[in-house]
Length: 131
Image 1 (cartoon, rainbow, N blue to C red):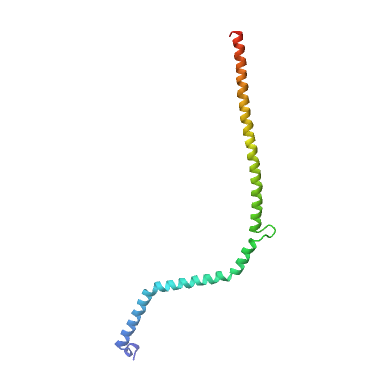
Image 2 (cartoon, rainbow, N blue to C red):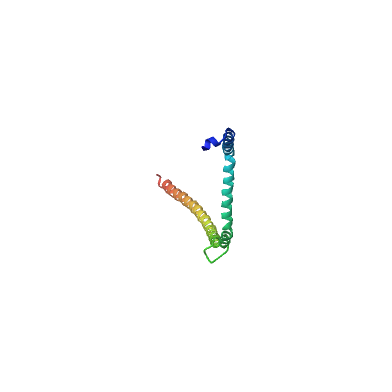
């Protein structure tokens, strides 16, 4: 007697219904399954990140303390000192440029006055000579 002869119609119908239910659950449940696996993946990534958190925090703390030249804090201190020096230099140069501008204006006035005097002198000589 074969396997198919030992199975009655009710069992075949039962298996077909179970298989159909399994397909329906798989198709309808697939988005939920995908969300669950994505959440599990994120949870694993979070656990991995949390595992290195103490070392990461120690590294960050080290960068925020002076350590003789190599930390971010040391670079900030050097940058701040350089900015103060540059600010003082710019203020000095600004004052010097202002002084040079005033001298140039004074020279321009002097040259204009000298040109007028020369023109008057030359003009006066022309009048005296009759030309």
